[in-house]
Amino acid sequence: MLQIWFALCRHYGIDEVLINVHAHGDAVRKVIEENKDGLKVRLSEETALLGSAGTIHANRDWVTKEKSFWIFYADVLTTANLNQMLAFHDSRGQIATIGVYEVPDPSRCGIVQVDDDGAVRDFVEKPQVPVGNLAFSGLMLATPALLDVIPDTSPVDLGFHVLPHIVGRMSAFRISDYLLDIGTPENYQMAQENWPGFES
Image (cartoon, rainbow, N blue to C red):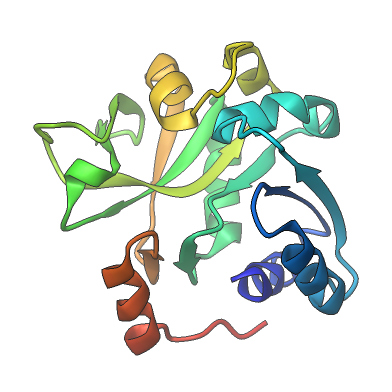
């Protein structure tokens, strides 16, 4: 997975990345050293998990001076066109832009309602009764203004604790390229069969 993400980053001109590590740190370091190939890689090793938003908060100094920065969930396989998503984000002027796609199992995802202009009007993480199947993809662009919305607690999760609070101030970019969350054994097996590969 790291090899694929590194190739995607290099392809789209992302030259510096931060990786959150909790388990199997030595194995991750080995993969990084063997595959970074010019990328600057910063490792954030968490002895206690901070949560997806907690990692961002703990490393806020790394991104606070950027116009915008990417957030990638590493268990997502995708061939998404990041240049198109970045152009969309830049044209919107919102705190954040989340990639969205249609899923067959919305109860295990962050479900989004979007208006005709692409603005997010509702966000519910793992709803018991989903109102649709348009889900957060695990790909996100944020501005430093997002940092001020993250609670100073731990652990803190983007889907549960942050994104619902910026409804109306974030946009949704529809991803039509290949995208699969391999966080379940079934999806992992599916990826073995239908992953088209990413050529850098």
